[in-house]
Length: 105
Length: 382
Ligand code: SF4
Ligand code: SF4
Image (cartoon, each protein chain N blue to C red):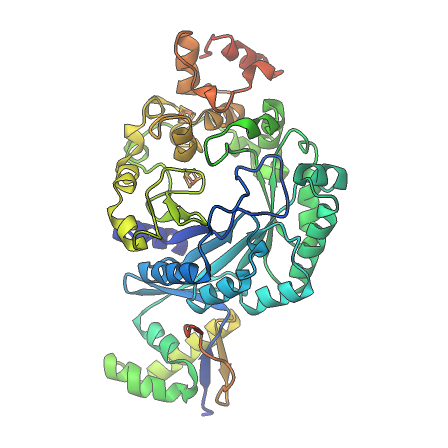
């Protein structure tokens, strides 16, 4: 199984609305609402941490779910978001994409 | 229920200002004859004031941020502000005339992932567009701006305002927008000046032209549905809110004044003197706006159009009563359905009653339509 890396795109808008993460792609204006698991993946998608580690260390710690099932779902989720330009997914660590949310001051 | 509707409902329940329209300046490089603004700078918020405001808006949960003006790009710090807003992860929509947008600007807007650029375009004919903007060559420059934005893959919407001088051009403008791959919007309403001045209303298109738009399937889709008689009024309509203004949306001027909407100039506070969240939560004016349900509306609550009317509480406010009818919307309801509104019936029934149309004249007497003429003569039908 090849490792996967995901990085948040800069081309999105995101806000937490009463605990619910909402994201809109500036590429195709698709609006998403993320559930708790998806929000963890989104927040952890720094381009450096392998998806398998995000699943093992974050998702399986917080939710009662088998690692294999969680990984399969996480992979499908990241691919779906990637198709809307919301995440970048790669077999290699993604270096150059500064995650959005940092404000240059 | 669509996700956006669910989010709006959630925002309403939790009192979150999901959308804010922020005008960065009232200055402009055009002088559109119908514009509702005074263009002099009376002391705009500076870059750091705006950045501070944007931080507060993000904290308050604002997601949709419309940056507009005047012409926002006349500000030297416009891109700095957009960059700051995008770093705070707002969904940014920019309203502009695109005159200052060239290759470099379009590339930058794309890199900043501005979700949408809305551009005013009044005609496909230079002599008409340029006469409205009062800037020679403005049509060519605006079209060049649209072209370069589209070439960079930005989503563009073309916004046209129906006026006397361009009334015959809207289909061609729509077609032009289509050629660019841009979305097209036509607004049949010219709004009064933000200070309540009504001089600009003389540019309004005639009732016949508005009616023609409402019966044009290329513009409204299913005409039969769009012009259908109003639905029966039930409790859900009577308990409904007039619109999102002050509930999940608000407007902030370049001077920091906060209003429920750009078209609803009820002063609710100033972000230079108070925190945004303080005004949003505690303004008595916003509390009053929020307390109004359709059943509380004078005249309108007894109007058969209540459930389908586009009644704007801001226009009603500018006519003197935020709970009253908005005569421009009465006219639109009538022109869609040929059924007179409660306000029209009331003014027709009592000649001594001061017409609400001191602000926006319902141009029934100018209509070629026989039904309209009879209503104008004070003989309500049905
Ligand atoms: S109806 Fe009027 S006040 Fe309400 S959101 Fe629309 S323009 Fe603003
Ligand atoms: S048509 Fe006029 S009176 Fe009737 S609801 Fe609309 S604004 Fe009110």
